[in-house]
Image (cartoon, rainbow, N blue to C red; front, side):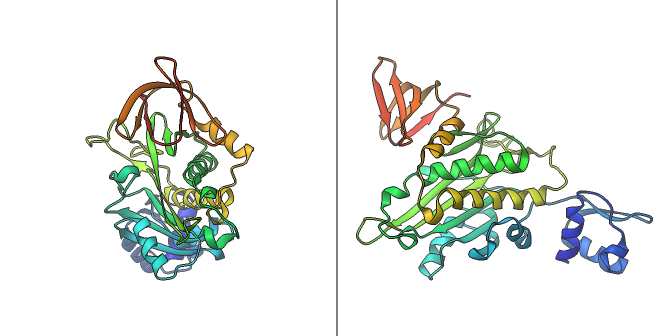
Length: 322
């Protein structure tokens, strides 16, 4: 079944003759009916898929992943969260670069334990790194900026696959046309000596095809595509975009070790859309208004309060009216 579906999807809505599919018409139609795809038959031209579904396909993912043999891949229909799934796999002895993708999550989480809505037709995956095993003398500080690297990985992949220019709200929220389209949650476990991490799991959720109208996040969340603008090759886009994000992430931080070079900091800075903006800063129990005046080389924000007092923001959250 998979071969026929892949062939038809690759044609992006064009017809393929039954002869090229190398099966009898009743067999082809049985496969198409069971697949859940909408399809059409033309006596002269053959078969075509008229509406594709955005689903993960292991063969497509592996095709787009660089050095795909290094990954242990789990393709899941539904899971509480891909991060939780990899935590359990790590305890069971999972290798570095274990990758879990899921069609839906029932208990997706964001920063500060906020709920992350995970509707169908999205991208939800987690990748396992083991920094303490990747290189000698690895320090915990070598991984602390991995969420920033993940945000860059996402925006670069979106530009490559779709041509759209997404941007970043410090530290790692990805926005497109004024709406948040991606959340990133990094979870880790310190080694027994506290000097490095035994594991780092980067969880990424991207709203690929989204419709949040009538929901609590209607004015905040968006998607790369709206429900009325879905391209016919959306399945291929979903798998390619996921793989490109993973490729970028591994390139930027192999083994979970962030190469915080000047080019990387420059690229991250160029993707921030909040520099020069007035924001609300939330830090612990404190909340105040400030202007973002820049980004330091260690990726901390340079802020200026209304009274002119300058501060460096190493952690916390900023909110902006878009």
